[in-house]
Amino acid sequence: MGKKFVVGIEPSAHGGLALLYGKETKQELLAFSCLSTASSGTCAKSFAGVLRGFEQFAGVKPSAVIEHPTQSNARHNSGHLQQGINYGILIGVLQYFEYDFREIYPVSWTSKYFRGMDKNLKKERGILVASRLTKKENLILPRARKPHDGIADAICIAMYALQYL
Image 1: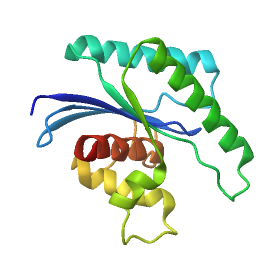
Image 2: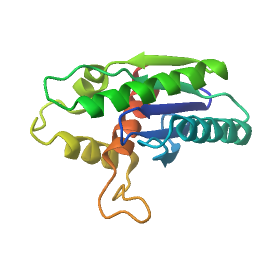
Image 3: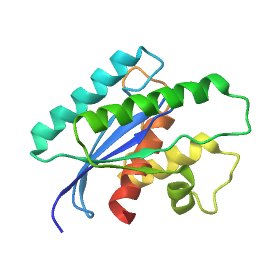
């Protein structure tokens, strides 16, 4: 099997991108927190810039896997709105630059990676699994005090794409 270039995208308000490049046995990981509640134009430009830059670096177009927003019973209306906005922007960028992409629901990848884990540890589960999958001791970004759960989920999504799609 040749080298793959996969982008895992978690489009929530504090989401992230995880770019995996390599083979199933050894991957190079680059993770970004370029999704935020910033203006839509800033989000689209930074996302497009990251994808185009790494396409030039790798010499191949990445295939993307984006998590589809789902409705929750919790009352996080502004968070769901921002996730929907980010999702729409990212789908637009992927289509504009003609990237191959797939949408997956959270249950697809969480059922593989979070089986048997405590359901009350929502954010911690992704951080723990992503740390184990990437063999990184922590997922703390520069200038941050705690691991970034959006990036952790994006890493899990990208790994899921490499292993199961």
